[in-house]
Length: 474
Image (cartoon, rainbow, N blue to C red; front, side, top):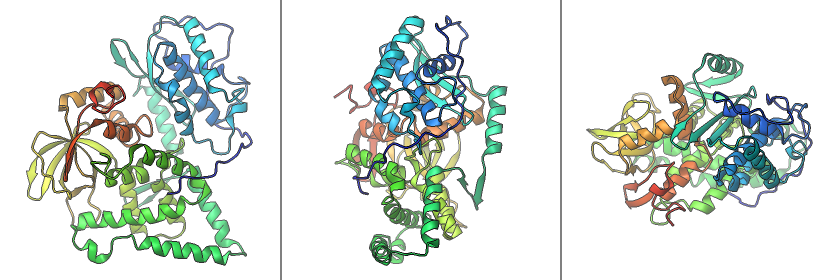
């Protein structure tokens, strides 16, 4: 994947979704005990807008909220968000919007410094630390936070929120293809399909470019596992190997297009930082990293991935629906934390800690493990008729902390909500994390030891001191 992508220049502002902010006043009202932190953060974000009475573009609204959160934490002595704010800004889907005119300037350090002073002046006693901020498609803001002596999250599962979620779901159009779901409204995929349609329907065809593309595709196809090579694998495994190989070929072709620049930058940065390939070079195995790169490394508010883009392009250009379906299974998959509950024939019985689902899974690495172990793995469902076994697609990462310690982590991280909402939050956390490199960084810093069939990790994602290779311990 090329790392030298052209950056697009400044583009004209266009109207986006409404960020529902309060009217700006001269002084902030004193904080009442029941006042939501989301209201205060919206109040601070409003101060960054050049014209607070105008409807901001969605990227400008998201950027303002992120900067407000970084300033809030900085004012209480936590500079992590402030120090990483440029990386966080790079993850926003700017689409065709240049937001800095809406925010007055592109001097983000100055914005943070001014809002930090505002926080210290108006909310000096409030010691809540922001863990994450979100904005719904309707422009509503939610903030998760911690306090010095406990962890607190924004209220979830309320009647108003459920009504809002139902409204959002009703507005979301989807196309189903035998067990998989392709979300509509994905800007990158839409741009690619439109661009490719124009090329296909155009009267002028660059024969040289066509021939070069054909030759490149032929070379890439040589890297795909052959029928003979796949015959050595269990059918439950072989179908996924072939699918991942083909997605790799298509991603190499798609990422040469400028519309895919953001994916290239995100994945190239992770390659440089974590040097994937497996121990002893890196604890990030090829299977773990490629699944993250294709199916979890998302960009923009629509959380597009190379997988969703490949599915959208493939569907538009008559890719076989069974192939799209299997890509969909991989796209919908994620890493999870599982308790080992013993062996059963050629399979291992795994129970996911939060969802409590149980499956019998093949483990291609050959590691059988022991009952009571905790595994951090990507488990794929059966992809072919007549196959009952699930598949542990990645080399197992065995976790050093106990089930009770991981349950405590999930209690700290997930909202206190009805079971269905909490599980949905867990699935989103395990797939995308609070930041794009959350889980890749965890694996890299938690590495303890390895064998050819298993890798051992130690520590928790939210306790830096517990991970052997975190910056705190270096």
